Image 1 (cartoon, rainbow, N blue to C red):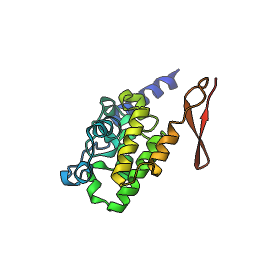
Image 2: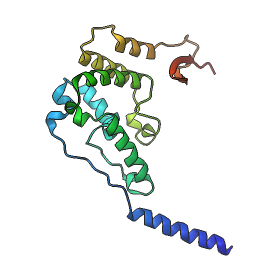
Image 3: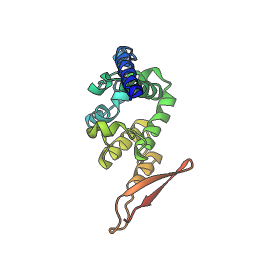
Image 4: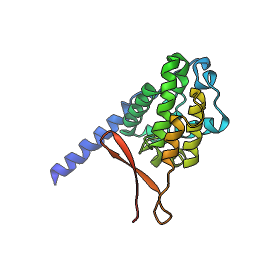
Length: 189
């Protein structure tokens, strides 16, 4: 019984200590001329989707949620945001190679189509961030246009594959990962 009291007080001290020592949550200042909207035409519906589902991790305009103030959560959130910004930062779009940006646009469509983004955990805490099929089609049409690809290009084929539906008796499609390839399956439970 005595060891349980000691363990409890040690846990309390540790939890209080991690409240004091937190990682820094930053929103670096950036030059607006480097923002994606300065380099590309971004329609209002796409801006709304990016604001709602992408910018917290992929821009320098992160809105830090209340739970990022309670340790140990800040450690996880800061790591996710830093990882997202390193992979793709819409606030620093103009600082990248234009050819690389075209490639990234295709990756954006691919990742939202395959439901890799906005990730699994983020929509659990931010329900509005979940992308609908219409959101995904909107993003893919925009990325295709921004790449200068004609209708029916690879991006639109990717988006179209994402919306193939099962027979009327089946439930909605799910993407299952198999090695490095993705295949669509239909659940009928």
